[in-house]
Image (cartoon, rainbow, N blue to C red; front, side, top):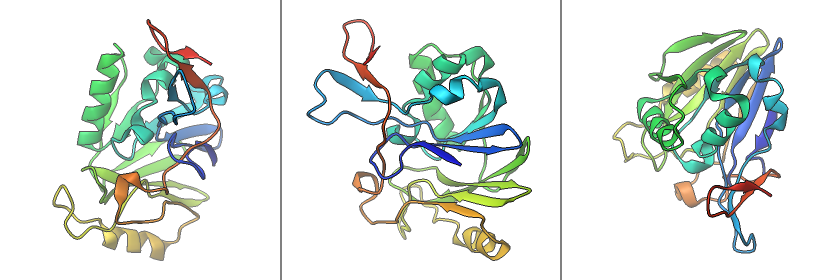
Length: 219
């Protein structure tokens, strides 16, 4: 497991999981600049190491549609080559938001796959399952990745909300079942009633993009 962003900071959530030489990426988020970042439009994770291993990426999984989990996707896909990009998985609303974002960037060749909570997909040495969570945006999911070593659970951003925005409570029974089965690694955020403005979400070192009249430039 290798975090490329989102660890101990706000924004740029992106985590790499590798087993037997095959890779699954969970979230590809960006961060908006702070006031002192004059001339900076966006701050992105440093995905240089993944560009060199694009052929080893089995899939990209997006937990929900907020920019700090989804926003850097167009830049990442351009770097690895959109035509050769791996399939991208997420809930139906999350994939609709990803599709709209990629359309803005004229990246239409990428395969986006709606995955219902509870469905299982084989991704090389991994098995993927989404678990429904509650957050300030509908269609938020936790990600369970199983391998021969054990199960990794990535919670994504969440809160245990009794009146969720999409009317569906978090699937606590499935989370409990995974706990009984055993979790090798829990990658989670601290639940909080304040949702998306919470300090639990992330920020890390990365490339930045400077303001330009044409397009963002690498700082």
